[in-house]
Every structure is written in structure tokens, then in C-alpha cells.
Amino acid sequence: MSTHYKLIPLTIIFILTAACSGIESTGMPNSPTDSPNPTSHPIEAGNVTRSLLTYNDFMNGFDYSSPVEEAALTLPADAAPPAYTFEGRLEMHGEDITGEMTVLRGDPVQEPEVSHLPEFDFEFVQSKDGYLIPVQRGLIIADHPYWNYIIGPGRVWQENDDQGYSRASFPFALVWKGSNATLNGTMSFLFTDEEVSKVWYQVTQETTISFSADMWGALDAAYHPGPVTDANQVRDAFAQELADSFPTRTIEQLTEDYPGVDASAFGRGVSPQNLTWYGFVVNGVNYVSACQTRYGLYPYCESMRAPSYSTAKSAFVSTALMRLAQKYDPAAPDLLIKDFVPEYANSPGDWSAVTFDHVLDMATGNYESAGNMVDEEHWDTDPFWSEEYYDERIAAAFNWPHSADPGSKWVYRTFDTFIVTRALHNYLGTLENLDTDIFEFVVDEVYKPLKMGPGVFTTLRTKDDDWQGQPVGGYGMWWVPDDLAKISNFLNVDGGAIDGEQILRPDMLAAALQHDPDDRGVDTSWGKYNNAFWANSYGKSDGFNCEFWVTEMQGYSGIVVALFPNGTSYYYASDGRDFTWDAAVREANKIIPHCQ
Image 1 (cartoon, rainbow, N blue to C red):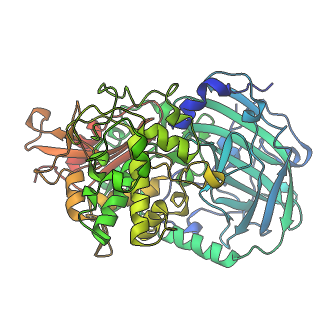
Image 2: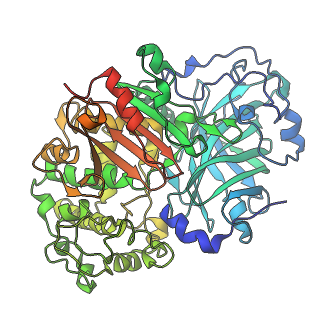
């Protein structure tokens, strides 16, 4: 029997926060290997022994009372190459009435739509080396009251007991509409060149503090084979995506490469049940953890999406200003909000002297309470968190009194990031054209040149024009480990340059990373905040021979990207609001000393 999620009390929180395996051998690594070469996965004869998701299950139906072990949806070591090639649409039927949900955290009851998938009808193509590639990547706005989709690339293979059918699985995520909250799952099915079996889906992991649930079901489906427009380009782009992956090894291999280093220091301090994944970037290699779910290791760790939450303030909004300053005008940080966001005129606050830089430092002077996160965490009373259209959200963002001079007092407020995102958007319009979008500007100028994957080419926006309005800015992106390896290396090692070309304004980046002693930013109760980056100091009292700073991008639920002064980076995604990197700082010091 389904247990349903109670929508009404927790919608605002979502907007804020924003038994056997069934397979004898799992084979496919649960984190990326040394090489992105797709032939690195062993392919044998197809003699796979399985008791879960069998041919009979897929063809005749089955009734499981919970999700199954993720191993049953994983490419086995002894699989054979697929006999069939999938190209066309995969359409499912009965999404609105089929499927189960068990709520593990959050209030059950009401709103039956929450426990069912959005309609699924999407195109896929298959590569010669057995990848199943969705044509549409990134955030997909679904025709569903509560859920959107993100779909990732999967695998196709052959098992001898599947009566000649080929077998496929792929990762997907459900994203709460208007929110960053993300639930990760896997789908699997059998197919020939004309038909498909039922599709089994399950959701077994999430990154959101307010809600945890298992979801599962077997849906009837139809295969609509046929040429996909630009299929070869889709395949070529995915092959290039694999080739451009940041060099990756498992976190356990860190100890092999650096004897004496304790790999368990990375991930330490974060409750295992709250971890999505974590990684450590050193000397051009991304050492990545596996991805644990409630039903074993996730088959597609490299594609498991985690929300950005407020790391978007640094990786998107601050990066946008640094790129604009470098490309167009070094004085851009000193521009006034009032000159680019006319809605300021209705604010009870004083925006006459507030600059872009003041907002990125969380020091506008317009706030009600200076208490830590008091203004920010009015989830249930402030309309900013519940309004979905731009006009209402910008009005709510400005609806705060004047309490201090600009630049004098740090008060953390995502409302203000929404304002500066609009200001940057409108400023860009004066430089290029009115149709230019500030998020697409960052994608084109930074993310694509960094060879980040297409999953970061979309972001959460206001509901205008079917959720294609103003980028939210302060949250609303989705990361995989490769994304964070690339952007942290770009900031912390390459100094904001790509292939020798300076992309970000160097003095602004130096200030953000605490490399400029004359510009530390604004005091918080435990460190500094500068250009949307947090920072904490270490010194002799901490056991080091010098004074240095660790700069971080941080996200609400427990997302951390820590940039160490020795050029290494440590990141993790979690949902227990754990923020800790001390053990990683000390272990990284064994590889490259922070004090040189």
C-alpha cells in the first residue's frame, strides 16, 4: 500500500532546500575508473545468474514490496554486447496510477500525485560501445504538479536468459518543482528492434533535508523506433563528453598513489546515511567515493545528481560577475543595483548606494534581523520562498527594511542573490542584447569552455513562460562529481584561466580565495565572506607552521566545495547539514604542504 507525502506543510521547505542482490556478479564500477574509455568495462559471454528483474518479471509482471538491490540494474561483469540497437522514443503508460512510495522522513498522507512519476516519453540513441544516451539532458520541466526530471546516460547489454532481448538501464532523478531537492533513481527494461518490456523504476537515494522516500513500480511501455534527429551529433557529443572527463580514480586508490595518506579522512565527519558522494582533487586527478543508496551501490555514480543549493551563489552568480568584469568592465562590481533593477523603488529599504559587490558580500544593509540565518530561514512566513513568478518574488526580495550602511554588516540572505542575479542579467543586456540571458552567458563563457557536461547547462528559474523565466541564482543547479572537479580546479589551480586565456577577473578571484590580504571581505561570526565565497583561517594554534585560509562554496543541506591553499580541493554532497573539512585539510597537507 502506498504511503503518500504530505505536500502542504513542506512545500515551502522543498522550495528552499530550496535479501539478496539478485545478481551473481555486478561488474560495472560504482565510481568512474582511471579512463573514461567505455570499453574498460569487461564484457564476457552473457551467462548472468539473476533472481531479480528476470525476463519473466519484465514480460509478465511482478509484485515487489520495495525497491530491489541496485545490483539488479547494474551492468554485470559477465554480460555480452547488446544484440539490438535502441533508437527512438521510450514511452511509458499509467504513470499517474502505478507505483508505490514509502516515506522515510517527512509527513506521510495526502496528494497521491506525489507518489507517481511524471509522464515519460523521451528519445534515446545508443552508441556502438553500449551506452544508452538520452537526447534531452539537464532539467526537464514535466507536465506534473510536483516533479520534474533529469535523465542520465545508461548502458545496454545482453544476458543469455533474456530470450534474445537486449537489456538496458539508466539513471534518472526526480526534482521537486520549483526546488533544488533531488531524488535519485534507476530504470531498467528489455527490448528488441520493435518492442519493449515493462519498465522497472526505483528511487533509493536523495539529497534534501526535508524528505526521504523509496519509490518503485513496473510501468507498461511502448517503443517507437525510428531515426532521431541529429542522432550522430548526440552520439559524438557524448563520446566527447566521456573523453573530456576529468581523470578519475576511486577514493581508495588515493592511499596507493600517496602512501601514508589516510583516504578515510575524506568524508569523515559527515554521517554516512546523509552522504551522496564525495571527492578529493589533487595533481589533476579526481579521487571519488562510491555512491551508497538504501539498496546497495548506485550503478551510475558518475551521473548521480546532487543539488547545488547555495554553491550556485559562487559557481554561477559570483562567477558571472567575475567574467563580466574581465570581459567588459573591471568596475562592474561597483555598479549600483538601483540602476539595473527598477523594482527597488518599492522597497522599504535603502538601495541608493548598494553595489553588486555589496550584494555578493551579503552586506546590503537591508535586513530585519542580524541574527544568524534568522531572516533567511523564514520558510513558512516569507513569500519569497513560496512565490513562483518573477514579479512576486522580486517584490518579496526587496521587502526588507534598511538597518545598516552597505558593506558594514554581513547578513546571509538568498533574497539579495535573486536581486543581484536580475541586476547582472539586465546589465548584460546593455552590453550585448536584450535577449541575452545571464545564466546562458555563464554556460557559454565558462561551463562549456571548461568542458563541463550538459547537466549543468540548465538551472532553476521562475515559473514565467513555463518555468523559463529569471534564473533563481542563489540555488537551483545540479552537480555530478566531474563538474565539481573541473570548476574547483579552474578556480583553485588555473586561477580562472582556460587554455591560457584569463576568463575571470583575477583581482576579484584573488579576493574571493583570500589571496589578497587587503580584501578579506566581510566578517561572519566564524570567518570571512567575500564575493559569495566563505573562508576560514588556520594557523599555529591548529598545528600548522603558517597562517592560511581555506575558501569554500557551501550549500544549505550540507554541500561543500573546499579550496585548499596547496591547490587541492575537497567536495561532498550531503543532506544532514554537516559542514566539516578539517580532517581533509590535514590529510591534504601530507601530500602538498599548505605552508611553503
